[in-house]
Amino acid sequence: MRVLIVDDEKLARERLRELLSDIGGYNVVGEAMNGSEAIEKTGELNPDLLLMDIRMPGMDGLEAAMHLMGMESPPSVIFTTAYDQHALDAFEVNAVDYLLKPIRKDRLANALVKAKKLTAQQLHEVNQSREEPNARTHISVHMRGNIRLVPVPEVIYFLADSKYVVIKTADDEFLIEDSLVNLEKEFGEQFLRIHRNALVATKFITGVEKSPAGSWQVNLEGTDNKLDVSRRHTAAVRRWVRNRRPAA
Image (cartoon, rainbow, N blue to C red; front, top):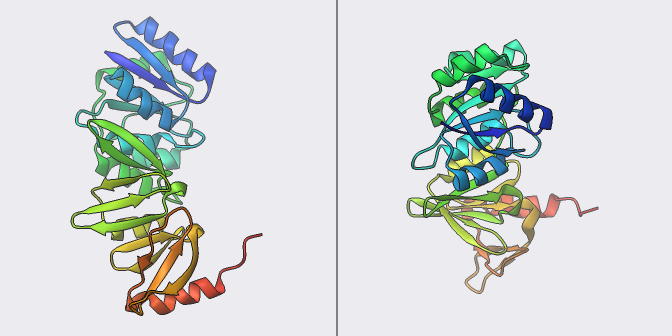
């Protein structure tokens, strides 16, 4: 079995390597130090299993696993964690494999035998069980079998287009299968609804103006595109623009 070890602590990665070597029958194909690197190396190395820490700087293990679920053939995942018992209850209830640090050889051996593929629903429920559920740091875009990670802070707007949503950044556009309702629930503090088909990142809004046709439009930094504001949302958008504090 091909294994990718994911942990931001070098000693933890070395410990897992040693344990796998002692157990035998497992080939460590690589290491990663955070969630985004784990996704990149999964695409390159095609591991059967990830031994992945949950708490890591940047993208954590739960978010990385959620992105990996979109692959045609995602790897199995065993989480490693130093969470307290209250947090671990969520893993038990949702039948998610985990190893509590410090990791013991016998516990690792048993987990490897029963390693299984996770479901998106399992991960969603574990994340929701946190005291403060985490919003994703990246949006995953699936392109020709690969995963492209788009940092949420780079997203200028989300625009509904038929059954897809267009993600606009300063340099690119991407299509994802999601809904604006879900995106608004997850990232509502960072984005403003201006139309039933559009969410815009508040940090990119430079102002509003009337179009030649008499409708209001939002001006955005990073793109020449001007998005229409619906009548329903005009008052709220103009009020937000007036009340926003000048940048320090």
